[in-house]
Every structure is written in C-alpha cells, then in structure tokens.
Amino acid sequence: MNYLCIGKFLKPYGLKGQIKAIFFIDEALDLENFSSFYLKDPKVSGGYRKLGLEFLSYRDNFFILKVEGIVDRTLAENLKNQEIYVDEDELPELNGNSYYIKDLIGLTVFYKEEVFGKVVNFIDTASQFVLIMKLLNGKDLAVPFKDRYFPEVLIKEGKVIADNLEDFL
Image (cartoon, rainbow, N blue to C red; front, side, top):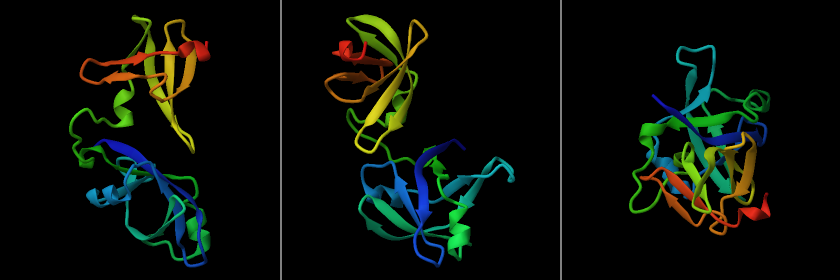
C-alpha cells in the first residue's frame, strides 16, 4: 500500500473528543471515495494505523470529525497536528489534462527552453500551492504554482514549462 497525506488534524473541538481537521482536496464529496483513513503509528506493523472517522460537519474550510476511540478532549489533543493518510490506489481517476499536485514531484522544469531544475516538493499555504524546485546549481527555489509562472504542465512528457521566473531570481 502507498500512503498519501490528504489531511491534517488541527485541534480539539468541544469536550467529547471531536476534532477539527483540514483536507487537501478540491471537493469535500471526494472524501466519500475512500474506504479507510490512516494515521502514522510506528508501534504497528507497516507504520500506519487505520482510523475510524465520522464526519460531523463542515465549517469555514475545516471539518469537525469524531475519531473512533477518542472520547474526550484530552485524547483528541493527542491527535493535534498529525497527518491523515489514504491508500493512494483509492484516489479517483482523473480525466483529460487533470493531474494531482503530487504528480508534479520529479518532473523536469524548463525555463527559457533549457533544463532549469526538478520539482522536489510542494507546500500548501492558506491561499495557494508553492512548488519547490531543486535548481541545477543545487539551490532550492520556491515559486507559487500559478499560470503566470507555470503556463504548461506536461505530465506524460515529464516536464513543467516555467515563465517569468526572473521575479524570483
């Protein structure tokens, strides 16, 4: 199984073990596609423990969840800032030119028609995704993932076309 982080617990909500969480997905209904959710746990074989999650409500860009076995605020506090994972094989199939942001990792970045670096990571800020590239000179460069800077993504060809990077150099 390949585990993929799709969310994160924030902080307890109320006194009965509920907890706030955010998910890094475009549509909340997509969460129904997953049969199971997981939490990193080095104490179990394989390093991940299956979670029983009940989605109680959605408010202001976060979910209120009930986690199986978490019955009070103190236990919920133990989940604070931990990531929520799913089996990557359960991701919904995409059509057309759509792709997952994770698919960008490892792609070669071309700038001014020359190899510029590779996408090595991304950061999801409150307002946008930021791509982290490892440049040919060994330095890292973080650039907002916007059409202005990345007008073309060619997943099948393994490349990302960059433009206007002089703003960051």
